Every structure is written in structure tokens, then in C-alpha cells.
Length: 319
Image (cartoon, rainbow, N blue to C red; front, side):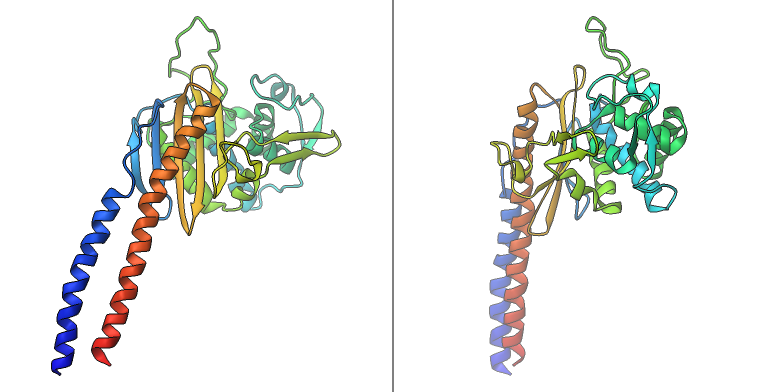
């Protein structure tokens, strides 16, 4: 009996400092990075916790990051059986006339839903996004109504509103200051929440967003991924564990990126809006990932160590 009491005292003396070390290390696990962007948000997908936010609730032009909602609406309809990946989509005049990044679709062309979806996920093709919107809802306007309804359904704020399926801005004059009136806007916090919902509802999206290339059958056209952080690309911006998710650029939005990466079971979502260069959006995302994994993995590792110690001590106490 006396032996058990001695072990109990030792357990209390040791576990209290260990608990303090856990908390202390979590707080010190990486200094808050200085990120040069108009808005950033870092989310721990496993817990939904926001690890860092700067201007996260400010509505801003998202460029092609708004295609995350386009992808969600499409995937939801496919999941319910309303449409299939092998459906053939006839390209309209309206789809061919959209500006920005395109795959040069011609009116009357026929492609499958899968080909067009991969074109927007990997290459961010605006004409492909409009073609899919028309196929899935009858018109781009009707599809946009579905996008905004879905935004409300998943709990996005009024700071996020969609006006088209592609993210193209209506005002493109260099002499005209950007205004949110009549334009797509998103907050960085809503973008992270949308990305989290997309990944949880349709985890296979990461199999597509992590492709280095996709091919349009019958056209001998190969489209390269715009996400330079993919490890498979092997460039200076690649980051271990990255497998998505969406880049974007317009003159008003600047360079934007919603990235996701996973390490040791910990998945992060980083949203960077409005950097000065395409390289900077990935450099700033790297800072966020480094900071986030320093926090989440330290917490996880320390807790594992603590529970293992506690179990060992308890076994000694009662044996």
C-alpha cells in the first residue's frame, strides 16, 4: 500500500511539470509570421480552429479562388446522381467569349464533364467553368444562384457573394478603381471555411487538385497545374504534404492562393489574398504552413508523449 502511495506522489510531481511543458511549448511553437498580403487566414482543418488571421473578415476580390464554390456545386450534383462525369457538354458562344485564362474552347465543341472539371481544378480555365455552369444549371445566371444558395447553406458570411462561375471581374478598365458593387467578393475566413467544407464533403478533390498535368482527349492539349507548391513539381516553391487547392489572379485581386497540406495526420488550410507576385503567394503560404505545423504537430507530439507516460505510470501504480 505504501508503495502505491509513493508512486502516486511521483506521478503527480512529474505529470504537472510535463503538462506545463506541453502548454508552454504550444504557445512557443513557432513565432507568428509576418505575412505580406492584403489578407491571410490559417485554419487547422481537423479542429476548425483559426490559427492566424489578418484582415480575415474583409471582403476582397478572390479571382479564381471563387471556383472552389463552382467545384463544390458540381461535385454535389454528381454525388446525388443528377449528373455524371461522362456527360458530354456542348460548348456555347457565351462560354467561348469569357475573358482571362482559357483553353480556347470553340462554340459547338463537345467535351466531357470530367475533362472540363479537371481543366478548372488544375488549370483554372474560365471558359471551362462557364461551360460547366451552363450544363449543370441551364445558364450561368442560374448556376450563380446555386452558388450563393450553397454559400448560405454552409454558413458563409454576407462578406462573400458570387456573380459568376469563373471569378472574372466585370470591370477590367485600368483607369477604373475596383469596387465590390456587382463583383464577386470573398473573405479569407469564408474561403478557408469553403475549402474545408469542400475537402470534407469530397475528399477526392485532392486527387484532382494534386495532378501536375491534365490532358484534353482528342486535342493533344496538356494543361499544367498552377499550384507551384506541389511536391511532384519539384521546384523551389514545392512543400511537403501539399495537395491542393486553388490559385487566382486578376489586376484588382492581385495574386491569391488557397493551399492545403497534410503532415502526420494534421491538415492545414492557408488562404493568401493580394500579394504582389505569383511567387510571393507561395512564399507567404510557406510561412503559414511552417507556423501552423509547428503548432499543431508540437501539440500532438507532446500530448502523445504525455499520455504514454501517464499510462506507464498508472500501470506501475496498480501492479
